[in-house]
Image 1 (cartoon, rainbow, N blue to C red):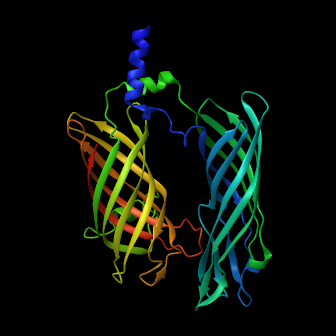
Image 2 (cartoon, helix red, strand yellow; image 1 turned 90 degrees about the vertical axis):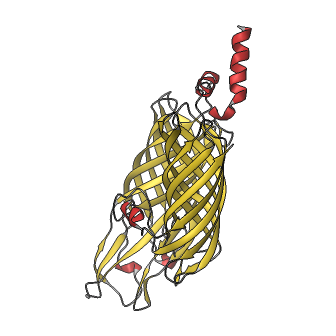
Image 3 (spheres, rainbow, N blue to C red; image 1 turned 120 degrees about the vertical axis):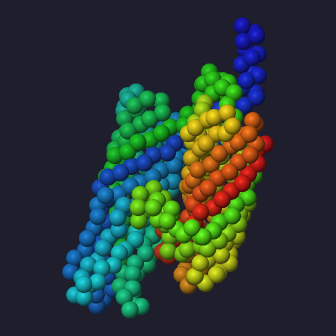
Length: 388
């Protein structure tokens, strides 16, 4: 028995990254989809304008990241929006159509009361931030831009499927504001919640005992070029398969330096890295030069393992970023705070997986937390890296 325990302790000591780090243990994320109502009408247009029809798509999504710091009590950050934007059609009987972009952010406290082992009721309340990007005709505002803080409330039911997964039914309400001609937003949805509870010691030891390599530190240099165009970006964004984002501001070239550290991995496939990066960019139209400084989480999925190399897919979402210039190619991209997203394919090569190569596409935007959000489209980037 003593020999077994010592062997287990040695394995656990050798690789502690198979247990959730402190900032992830007892956290959760959820995705909810359902009916969103935001009753825009001609009342919300400026004086002198009217539309023959206002089309309001009612399918919406709400994404949540939360942390449970007491039994039944958690804090969460949310992002809610319609999948498609509201459209004003036949404005002033001239057949023009314009869209209004709107989303609601939230910072709420959630209290959950257990009715049984399988069922809980919950309520949430806190800060709501409504952001709307309107439109102009002949340089005259028709629906104005707006950003304001308010309250956000919600109630719902959680059905506990197992230790990791919950199924939730939720109703959320955010008030409108007459001073900026913004209607209220209500959302009724169903969704899933994934709970990241600390893993058992047996599971930690099992995941650390495979002998498979998950590199701990990664340093990369990258070069970006639009020599091959933006076909990959367009194919994976709204113009094609909508799994990534495009952007109205196109980048011509760039160079970057990234450092990533692995903080968690499973037995064979999944790894979570966190790190930072510094990049220099030049735009395609006006050749505007600027730089970005980012923090980013990277989700890595190893698809194929072979003797000479391991091949993986990766995706990074909403990395907080400082952007040095806010007006690029004659467009205002928002403010100096934005987010970075990127996705691609890569490999770790060599006996100890010391060598790294990747190809990815990037995107910068502020997630509509500011009224101006054209987005930056970053073409193919080629990275070379070294691990230790």
